[in-house]
Amino acid sequence: MGSLPQDYVLPDASASHLVLTNPTEAEKKQTWTLNHQEWGGALSLSEYLEREPYIETLPLSADGGMSHWILTDPTVEGPRPVLASGESTRKRILYLHASSSPEAAQVKEGIAYGVGSIYTYPQFRGKRYASRLLRELGTQLRTWPQRQGTTSSGKPAGERAVCSALWSDIGKDFYARKGWAPFPSVHVEFPVPITAPANGELKKESEDAAVELTPVTYSNLAALCAEDEHILCTRLLPRAARATGKTCVAFAPDHDAMRWHLYRDDFIASLVFADAGQQRGRSETKGAVATVAGSKKRVWAVWSRSYHGKNPDPATDQGRKNTLYILRLAIDAGADGKDEDDIEADDDLAAAFRAVMREALREAHAWKLAKIDMWNPTPAARRLVERTGLEHRWVEREVDSIPSLMWYGDGEEREKIKEDEEIEWVANEKFCWC
Ligand SMILES: CC(C)(COP(=O)(O)OP(=O)(O)OC[C@H]1O[C@@H](n2cnc3c(N)ncnc32)[C@H](O)[C@@H]1OP(=O)(O)O)[C@@H](O)C(=O)NCCC(=O)NCCS
Image (cartoon, rainbow, N blue to C red; front, side, top):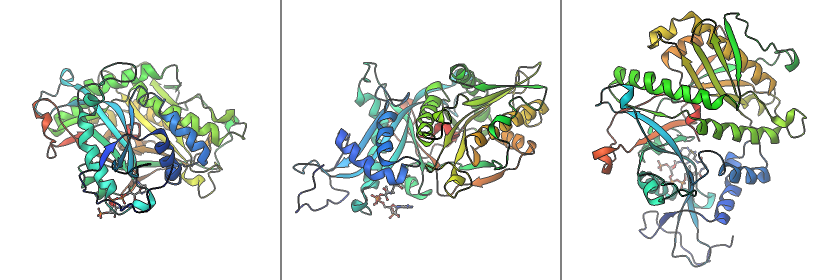
């Protein structure tokens, strides 16, 4: 990329000629090269420059699902400045209006966007360019499906989005001032004992004979996601709507959303373990399903790994941050267990959850991860956590990964961003993140 004209004076962020647009491939590469320091994690620059284009090919991102954005000055002759940058990824959202009867039949499906990688080149910081980009992006995403027209495979992109969400790493205020309201950011952290037995000795079966444990793999993932979504629509959303009287919203925990995380995980782990001979980072196990013998009750979790450095030794400073994230915890309480009280008091579900968490601990140990994090467990899941007897601590994040949501609404009120509408974010877990 060439440099800016020597006499170029940086524009005021409120200048009307600045535009939000999509970057060229060269501009994307330039941006990744700079923001590798922020988000490269365990990857070298060259690996990161491979990963970012790979992410564009993943489920959710592919077929026009992912868009890159820059704020730029189109009046500059020659290479234009990238004053601020970001990304959006289209996702399915399920929602139930407070005003409608809180029944599953009323659950609607819409388009949402995950916003990420908000970045200003170091020399342009503090000039409100990120703020301007965010204000434009927050508004533009509402109608982006319509303006996008068709996806790359020729399908209509849709009408409008009902919301957008981001996960702030810079606290709760900056994005709130731009219209993305902060939502609960609690997680439970389970430390992985460093002294756990070596991989070969790990006991795979459940300690509890009444619980049958099977792995989540790519072959059963789609079916589990469909069942999870069914439970969300028939039980969790209506229950939350009844309990809160608010519009209840959940990102669909669907096959694409999970595979986005899992393929990304496979890519990174294959580089972290490139020389370690450990199946080159490949793990067939993407989670665990615990089924209570003789009943239809089940608990399952889908998880992914996160590494902070090339040396995945959990005893090092970097290694201590390596985390197994529970992307999604699903609880199928069977026909009888319809509300939170039933779940938290259910001994079978407590045993099933314990079995899932033990398996997660084994997997985390095998993959040199120092801790397991589960975001925003429901009150019933919190109780199940307490009943595991496993060491854990509760963390309220004030700075990192703060889920933040801008609700646009739908129907007659589409034209107006309903900032005051009260929203309950159901299943506000790691799988929503991008
Ligand atoms: C965060 C970032 C995008 C801001 O870009 P910018 O163009 O300088 O932002 P603006 O000039 O529009 O706004 C500056 C505001 O951001 C705040 N800010 C910048 N970095 C911050 C940080 N690390 N923590 C909290 N606030 C921060 C400033 O305090 C200032 O606040 P104010 O609105 O109260 O004055 C930029 O610093 C950056 O790229 N940082 C590295 C990547 C990053 O952290 N991105 C955000 C990920 S969620």
